[in-house]
Image (cartoon, rainbow, N blue to C red; front, side, top):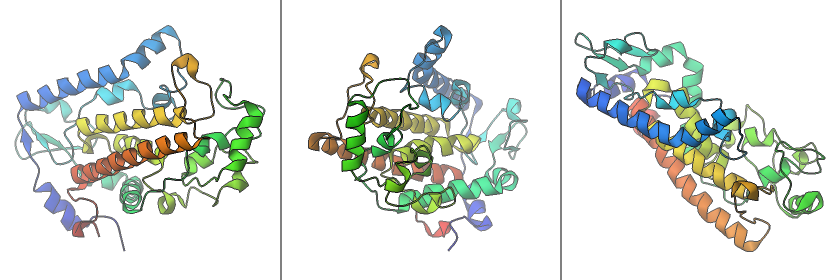
Length: 306
């Protein structure tokens, strides 16, 4: 059963678009830029001072999306901007029905990037369709330093090497996210419940995974103008909140950066992790549905999507 919308579905979706006057859309664009600037202010200030932050820089280094990309507002697929001649040459924008009108074009995106369009849609739909798994307790970060003399972050381990290894050995590695799994140490790889690969990623991703929740932001960026700017920033905020928990539950001592640990080696820490993990899963699925509605005009599980 295909998860892609048919051409007829895309046509029906395009008929439901709205039209924004120049005053309306420029006001939204200004408000969006101000919100984006507020969200990235600390990172930009650190860049000017040549400082790094092991928690907050992740969304700009790992994903490689710059603050300027977050500032650029788009209305979403099929939304017509009146008196928008300056967007005539913007990627994946097409002329509207009147002079000076332009709108993001989902069909143009799919025609130019068919494989990417298919991948993004599959990842959003299939991830949301699966039940969340909430028993990993963030051990993926611990598996990245298991029995290692050196590790990715130049900060100490709060339990030391032996204590960190003991937590991994007493736990149950059940990671489902390939982009976390690929950083496991060689000794940690065989301890995971299942082997992971890039090809199997769409078949295993599930909404309880913190990294899958952060990736909602990645998929939104890849869709460019097809996602409303406000929705892109909502996805960025979710990714930022998740990143905080990801590092609070990690084995690192981040007290110099004001990060208090969620001690997942204890029963209390596990309970806190799962509680917050469940809330992130709900937020992530809500954003997945909003992205699909904005991009393709059909919600998760709708007949048009089958």
